[in-house]
Image (tube, rainbow, N blue to C red; front, side, top):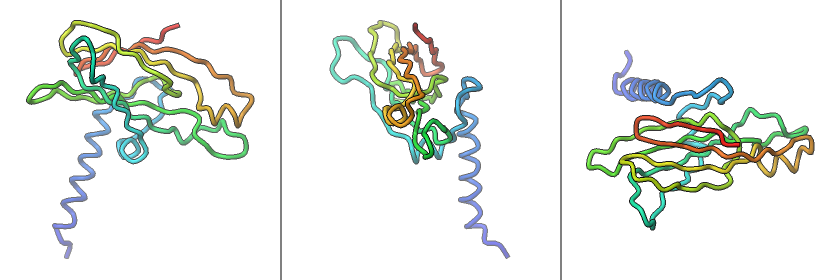
Length: 165
């Protein structure tokens, strides 16, 4: 006889992971397949919401930097070459709208800048990124770093990601 008390938590965990996987959109085919347990277990939380600004910030934004473990840019060894990024967003309401988005661009977040705006429940942020980690570049002289910028327009419902030249 199987005890139902042991099955219920397992079923709830499987259901929540399955629903979470559906909620995290994959932006394009070159984005790595990273699941929620990896984001929570390996991701580095970066709270980028400014605290003291001259204009009101309508959304709370957190970035989860998750190492991509299947990269092979290290010579005869393993290491993290790039990171995937997830953006968690929330309004400041009593019953906040929340969402999580996966960026299609991968690499290394070097810096970010909040761009001023006056729209409600909207933020615009520019990320300065590198193609590879400093460790990967030092280990593999064949890699060429390509710095780039990504402009993000974020609402609780969607994210628009624009690669800037």
